[in-house]
Image 1 (cartoon, one colour):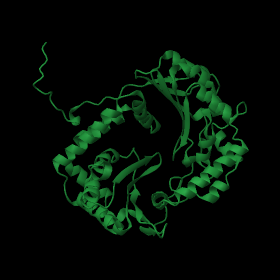
Image 2 (cartoon, helix red, strand yellow):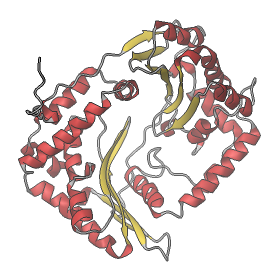
Image 3 (spheres, one colour):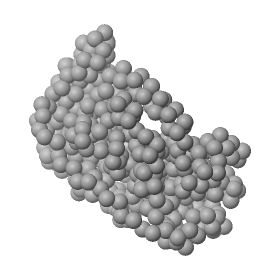
Length: 427
């Protein structure tokens, strides 16, 4: 068949494509632990995540979740911190541990062939970390130093204050780092949190890359043989914060020439039926570079280099926050324009061509997310950790494709009332 080099191929909008999340393999290890794995990709590499309910939500003392994640690979009863890092570096592997509001994640990146040698090291870290006093002291010193540096930055302070306003300082999602809280942390606090929240009985294991049943068996051999007893973690119930002033001005640097703006409100998590439609509306408003906030406040007014609106869904709540930095002399004007754009959302129906652009942007990004084992697994992790099935993914795709401008206007009238937002401006 002769190639036709004169007629260009047809151009299709992203909205016209079908979106299928590749299926995930699920295996229950011999001791009942869940393993989710995906064989994809062409390189002999693997990413494994061990995810625990060990985020800030489960803290009984401030700063302990991040300290535990930061120190978990810094010594066991069998190896020093140096020996652990040396063992990982010998195989060119990378291990990182992080804690967020809800979960803590320990991640291994390695060549697939090195799994038999590295999995026992990870098991040791997850079951036998001892948190040496010297390592705890160094961590606290470094954490305090980072905090003092960050507190000089208006955007860091603004992020702290808006979360505290929305959730309350006593709430895990509103709590923020303080020097005295880090200083008060002890090795015993970290050990207690580690033993309670990093119990293997509560782990979920996710594995993606170019892997086979043989590689899955390696995980079984190390993590599936030890008996575990399922334990329920107690979690407090937190009341909404008492009403406070909605506008807050913070002078962080008397000589500062730039300020940070955060304007936010509480918003439901992914389980709320409004969440998926709101993803579309928030994208149009401030969720990408072509958004209304960016077009007005950056491109037309020149007040900022960038401005965005983001949805932050957590397991036990969420928020909707507009965030930007701007020159000190235009902060008030930028705030007024943000509220103006909210009013426009509520009072005017979005043009069809603008809505189509937003839909194609959202769905086009999804095409990228469905290419490659690690990004596909990220989609699956979000579903599983939130208690969803693939039906939730499919339903969201349908919302993104079919939602109308009229439905978005009604949604805006529900969630973009100016009086429902808290405002923090830090200079």
